[in-house]
Image 1 (cartoon, rainbow, N blue to C red):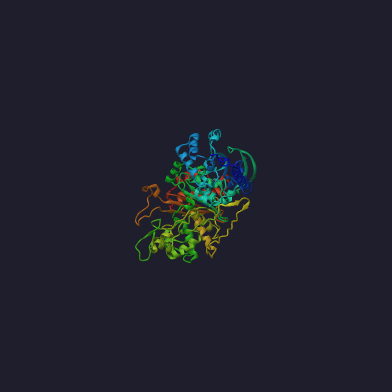
Image 2 (tube, helix red, strand yellow):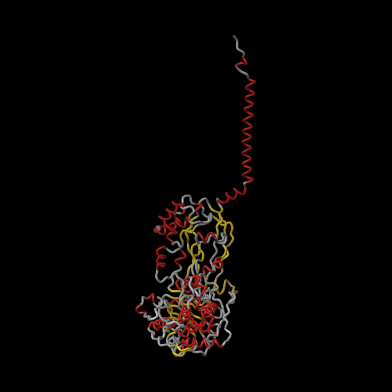
Length: 636
């Protein structure tokens, strides 16, 4: 049987299959080519800007330029806060593949201690804005810089950056007044303006540095640079210069500030001096101080713990946060309140048998002189610091009027215009005690307030301010630290409305001033030794603040008490009496009587401000006089 040829091979059918497959392949190639061209078009046209930017970022980098922080000078142009060149170790986390390995390499390369290595790891892990360099170490030395330079190829994302670092030439003397700058922490980073603080690693933490941060900081700039594959800068393509911070001129006098610190050498206390007419703070010292430069670069844990645990509290700003009973320093203010309220007259006298008794009360509130001062009028009450006179006056005034009159002088409130962290102290009242303890106010507590004891707590700045208001005959000028910001003078008349002192009779001031002058120059004055050789007229008032209360029949004996339980010594003064140029408040903790252990310091401050250089007593001689002073002079 013969087979048909078309059953074995059909050319027409094979041709149709070939054509169909060829067409399908061509369509597939055309489709794939179209898809590829479409993708290329999308990337080249639609995504052009995106990929141009990404490509540019591989060789072009935008870097922030931190502004130069403004300098701080004293009133005479002496530099108090400088900027010195330094080198910092920076890390850009987004450019590092393995942060742990990089940090381990830095640890071994720089031979860091365990504490330093741990600090670097903490800083590397802190919240940071993308592609912003994190500050790992400040103030690198030459050896560290050289090691990093040699090993730079092994440390992608790690850079050594030149910057200006804050430096305080007189760190201990100015520590509390100026404050210091420190590293920006995570909480501060959340609230700061990202553009203004770009590339900035430090911010004011305390004092003037904190209060005037906006003025001192300035505005960050930026620059565009070309880099190679390893991130090394090849050239600068453009820049926007940063705006430097404004320089600040303070009212402080560096020499007077230094003198105040030297007078308090090895003592705990504070001295504040104010120019009454302008409110300018001439000196504001808290002792002991500390080296504020250590806080700029990051103080180590051991040193910081030692400062915190120091019983003398060097970190505590006594001038604005220390709370002390004002003692007898407030007697001139109470005398003024008595005159204003009509409870006393300059000629009215009382008889002092050595104590005061409330009606129908057997308790005796004793004068510091146990046998009493006899007949006492207003001026003599100030000169001899008679307690009985002021027990009686306080009882007549009552706590409500006392609170009102003393509040008008600044007690119980923040008094300064630009002092960061100032405490309001405490001026007690009925409402305060009821809210604090849920108890009524008792008449005996009013008597304690009448001699500056009990619940009443003041800061040295408040005491100096009240003294300046007194020297100004009731005219209020808020204390301030800034004299000029850049080229602009800070006005002495600030917008806050001053309180009304309410003195209607100008002659009353003369009686108050006369009593205060007799404190230092009168025959019975509690600080009459201080007035010896005065070349100008000076008004003052001593005070002794109890650290703990004595029982009715107990007597104070400093020799039997631990040093930190002894009374605080206080003194306030202003001079010259006719046209006061300086008002001073001195507090020396646990020193004893204010007339023997604080008055000399106030005298040294007024001498230094008012006399020519050759006429100012030597500090060492003054200290020797103080140590050898006759303790039999009234200690109140």
